[in-house]
Amino acid sequence: MPRRARLRVITGSYEFRAIAVYRFGKWAEATFDSPVARPLRWILLAVHACLSRLVGRAYGIRIDRRAVIGRGLYIGHFAGIVVGPCRIGENCSIHQQVHLEEGVRGGRRGTPTIGHHVWIGAHSRIVGPVVVGDYSAVSAGSLVTDDVQPRTLVVGRPARIVNLNYDNTALLGAGPD
Amino acid sequence: MYRYGQMRSDLREDWRRYVRLFRPAPPGGRPETLRVLLASPGFAVVAAYRFRYWVRSWGDECRNPLARFVLKCLLKCLNRTAMVFYVYVAKTYITHWPSIGPGLYLSNKGGIVLGPRAIGAGCTIHHNVTLGMDRKRNHPEVGNNVWIGPDCVIYGGLRAGDGAVLRPGTVLGKSVPDRCVVEGNPGRIVRRDFDNARCLASPDIDVGAQ
Image (tube, helix red, strand yellow):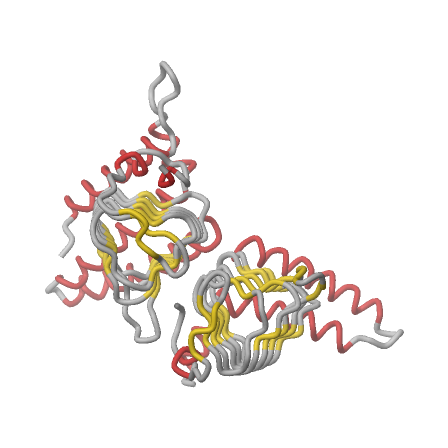
């Protein structure tokens, strides 16, 4: 990536800032775990709490600190993103108005688990203990209520399987939907 | 080519719509015309976008290289300032420089991401609406007098015909003809030859139901 483009991401991308705040919280939580460093951890986590509130209010990107997110997360646009305490794999991309939240499905309460290289389109909702497999794509505006196999494209509300051998590299390379 | 006079008349039309929808006259009183300027982030977004569009087209057609340079720099500053306002205050975002017809009503609640090719005259766009590109990077086009309800997604190189109504929560990936009502995910046409004048005349989010 050219240096100018890198600079543009830091100065101009609101979504990147939201992710940075989340990573900062994770770092503070993991690094200062010893009993000696506890007070410092409290201070840093308080800073993180303030920053993440600010980001949530200002950009509408709410990422819970309990979420476990792999590297290379891409957020397409701001506004209305809620990431609850879920697990997200590496190199995923999520877009505006996406909700990944704790919920009840089939009598079980839980949080969604997203695999690696998953593309989640705008306005999708993934709620409850759902597993979305690697390299799958969730189309715009879908409501995922069932497990999604790897390399699958799901569409609709509730989501139906459209393609069982879907290649989402073009989507992950492309920008927002 | 976007002339100053056209920007002014477009803005006047927007203002008129906002006064009618967002700040209607109380019974027996006069409409609160100026309140629109102060209390409506949606109108501010539309106004800022039109101003930026005018500066941009002025810079494009300017022959004098110095004036051109100055206008381009001004446009960059404007873009930055407008972006801050769009994100922090209005939560609304307009990209890809669409040509927007007069009388656009954007909801004041925000959550709108607009990246269309063009928007026609007299449209209403409610909160949490996305107009974006598909994987082939085609952008949608919206006709005149289209009513787009909250939580709609429109993507791909399609055209929503004149006078169409998109009920709340529609996800549209294909073109729809003029004057029809679309609903659901994926969007289906549930009614044809529908007159949406009542939808456009009210700020309510579910007047398309009737």
